[in-house]
Length: 451
Image (tube, rainbow, N blue to C red; front, side):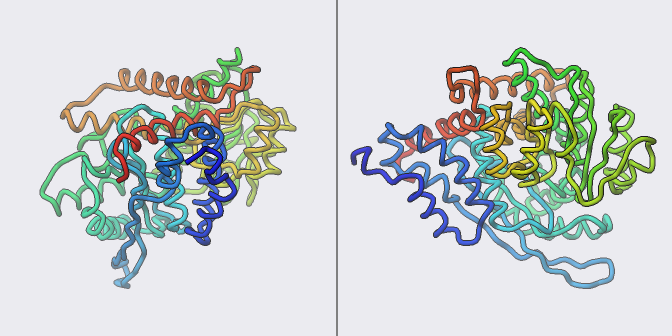
C-alpha cells in the first residue's frame, strides 16, 4: 500500500463518529490525538498498514453490568457499572474508577483512551483502562457506600487482577471506597494481591499517592517554566477544584513560593486575594474529606475571600492556571480571558479539562500548555510504583518516592520536548505528549502482529 493510499484525518474521524454515535467525549479525545498522530505517521507505512491508530481507538473490551444495592430506607437501587479495557500492549490495564452521575460509556472510553498514552509516557509497564458507575456517593451514608462498593466489586472482580487490570480511585472514589472494594475482592477471591492502588498504607498502599497527581502537575509546570528560564516562585495561580488533586497542587505551588488565589467545586469558586496558604489548604482538606462540605463555606471562614456562585475561576487575573476539577471545564472564551489577563502557563491536573477550542487558543497564543496526559501523569506513575511495592512485599519511604516522582515528571517533560519542539523556542506539549505516548504503544503492537 502506498502512503498516498492511506485515509486522511477527516475520513478517519468520520469512521470514529459512525462507530461511536453520540459519544462526544470519546470522539473529542480521539480527534485531539489523531490530528497530531496523522502528521507523525505521514511517512510511516508500517503504522498505516497495521491500522495501529484505528486499533487503539477501539477498546479491547467494554464490560457493562448492573449494580443492585439497598439504601438505608430498604429501597432497592439499581445503577450501571462499566470497565473499559482499552489497550494492554505495554502492560496490564491501569486506570481509575469514577463514581459520579455524569459517568457514561463515552466518558469512560475517553478516559481509558487518554490513559493509554498517559501510562505510556510514564515509562512504566502499564496499559490503559478506566471504569466507574453513575452512582453519586455524595449524601450517602458510609453503610450505603459500602453496600454499593461491595455490589460493584461482586461483578468487577471477574475482570481484574494484578497481572490483568489494576484499577485505582478517581472522582468520587477515595480511600473509603477503595477500602470497601478491596475488602470485597479479598472476600470473594480469598487472595491478598495488589489488584487495586490507592489503598490505605495499613494494607499495601503507597506513601505519596494522595499527593502525586497534584504535585506532579506542578512539577510539570515547573519544568515547562524552567525550560523557558522561569520559575513558579513569585507567580500567582488560579486552581479549579477542591478535592485531592486541587488541594495538593495548591500545596506544592505554595511550597515553591507561588500564591494560590482560587479553588472551586460544582457550586462555584472562591477568590482569596490574600492567597490560600498552607493553613487554609489544610482547612479545605478537612472541609472536603471529613465534613464533606461545600467550598462556599471558605468565604464564611476567611475574611477578604469572596464566593462566586455558579461561576468558574478563569476570569481572575493570574500568572498560572491549573484546571484540576473535571473534563471540559475550561472553554474557548475562558481560555481567551486567561490569555488576555496575562497567564503564562496552564498545567492540567484533570483529564481533558480544556475544550478543543480552548486548547487552540493556548496554542495560537504560544503560552505554556501542559495537557493532562502529560501533566497529571504523576498520579498513575505512583500507582505503578505501588504495584511494584505490592509485588515485592515492600514499602518505600516518602523521600524515595518523592525523588522518583520528580524524576518521572522530568522524564515526561523531556519526551514532550523531544517530539514537540518546533525549532523556534516554542514547545507544542500536546503534540509532544501525543507522539511520545503513541510511539511506544504502537511499536509494541507491531511486535505482536495482528492480535
